[in-house]
Length: 300
Image 1 (cartoon, rainbow, N blue to C red):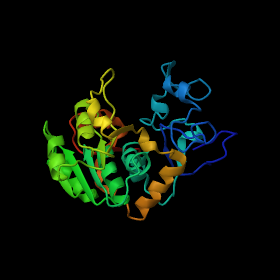
Image 2 (cartoon, rainbow, N blue to C red; image 1 turned 135 degrees about the vertical axis):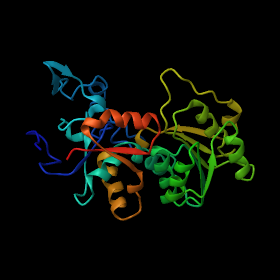
Image 3 (cartoon, rainbow, N blue to C red; image 1 turned 60 degrees about the horizontal axis):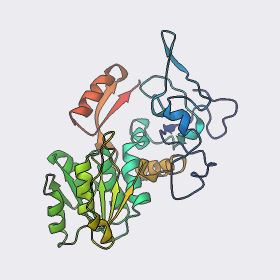
């Protein structure tokens, strides 16, 4: 709608994807290829403020803080330009919006964090938005075998559509089953996308001795801890964390959108429900019930 006087990279009418993980391109972290965790406005954003330490939202005269730096459950929001990814206007916004979080997190976990190699074996625990993105990312990287583990048969079917070669119903023996499926060795790359610390441990146990890499994409509950048998690490397995898939949003989200337009990434299958803004609470109920993959709010 409008831009501030000092804004340089976007202008009125541009199509953008909002980013909870900004990219200033100037701080120490932005200039280092090893991380995407921009430092520019981290302190202010964690407190619910805009970069200048203020809010632009209020209700009945009381200030409302900005959630995750985006506050997009509203008809209008105010964003710093370092948290906007300018995208091709040919991309439908009701599809491109999925690249703002979960889908990019999964894609980036495979492409940026794990750097999956062609011909490798991968296991993805969880077939929600992040997990399905990881499956797609492994496929794009040329993985020869992609095993997806979930409790839902319908979600596992979606995983097959994204490139999974094998599927497993999750459970306490999931790691054992993965090891058996991989000839007793485990996988080159494993991804955890449920947020369960028990599944995180399974992801580590499913990684191959010698070089297996377990990437943690899911967010565990506050105060929870991950219990790993040290022997698993001593014998060469590694564990990595992946926030927003290591994606430097202003640079890489537009690239993901281009790959969607080129047909490399299927986004349409992930939109399970379309809601109005007045129905936003129903969206949370659907999410809690694990009904579908993503609900998109139609502001029209």
